[in-house]
Image 1 (cartoon, rainbow, N blue to C red):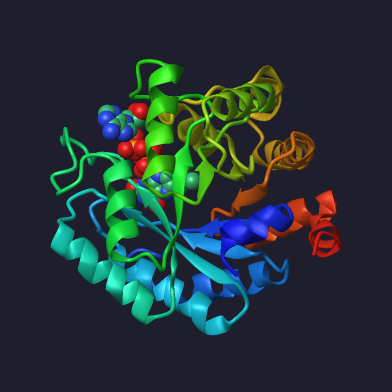
Image 2: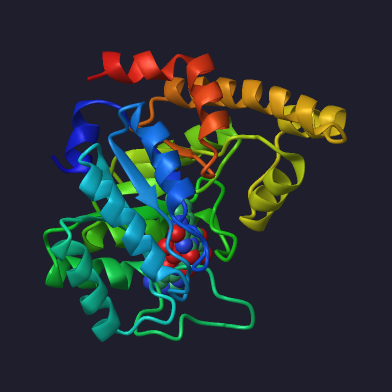
Length: 292
Ligand code: FAD
């Protein structure tokens, strides 16, 4: 069943992983996947290095997930540096492996770039291209509850999201957003703008100070006071920080579930032990089974 169909029946539950670097072995990632399968995720998505720097590794990871038969692999894919010919070849490779779910992205520009240097400038063009040439794919697109950092206004950004829906997207996956009230405001606003796609919300676990600050700020997202206080209180003590961060993440999971989301997507950061702690603490293991 396609993920967009699953989301019509229940709140989906999923993880994101990233591939190892080209010169690193796959073993750790395969081990991580084994531990994530235990939670019966509806899918696991795998990131794609903009510019295709680790595209080979992304394919290996997606293939391993597919081969396991344990869940649906979703590949991320970007326009950066990709021509129509490259894209056709890559997408056919995924389909040949039985991978028919994709998150269609523009991608962030590598340092010094001002455009994609490929055939498509924006994700909506990629979505339309996939829909026309490879209609088998279930297509997710990115949504930004706090506005994409390059957009001048919410109105403009939401209008661009609407174009992605109209081009044939099947569901939305959100950018990191710690501010649940802001998410609710945005979800209502996009609905009023005629965007009716299911929304899969990404939750970033709070595990260590510098990475969480960097990942949040680099997306133009805000650090709410509750998280700022954790950073201020425990920032100098990694162990206490992680403990408080995990508790905060469990609360966030429930705040988002209570906001009526269509899917819960955990950015696993390939840290299965911490993710297991968080999910055991939150009772999600049982929650997902009871939602079947
Ligand atoms: P777009 O939808 O094209 O939007 C980019 C900007 O252009 C926005 O400001 C938008 O308002 C504007 N815009 C959109 N369409 C138009 C138009 N037609 N005309 C004018 N302006 C327009 N990046 C990676 O490199 N690899 C990954 O694996 C990856 N995974 C991600 C997973 C998730 C869940 C999310 C939310 C993001 C991910 N990203 C990833 C980051 C993403 O590539 C960046 O956020 C990127 O800056 C924008 O991608 P987009 O698909 O949202 O672009």
